[in-house]
Image (cartoon, rainbow, N blue to C red; front, side, top):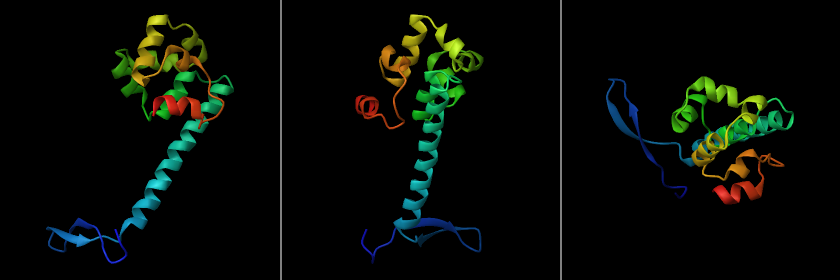
Length: 132
């Protein structure tokens, strides 16, 4: 959009009715989006640090990278949430069967090897290039 154009949005007027109003443009949305992405990147970096420190399993990194909650991942994998919580711990992750690892890998659309590999950084190009 050019400087002389604005986006039209809905707002509630003084009478409680929805009306069309011009927005302030893209700058506020771009700022909000940049802040939201920074929060996501921080969560991914934090998860990776916990994995590297040995306090979380690689599953925590992949969950953060895909913006998934324990409940959502449990639903996709078809297990109870408490099992996902257990698998987020290194000892629980190490006890996974090959079938369970494959199910998690399928959810993230990666190989079992990629699921168990600890990336060198949160923006590991090799990992992201393969997975979009």
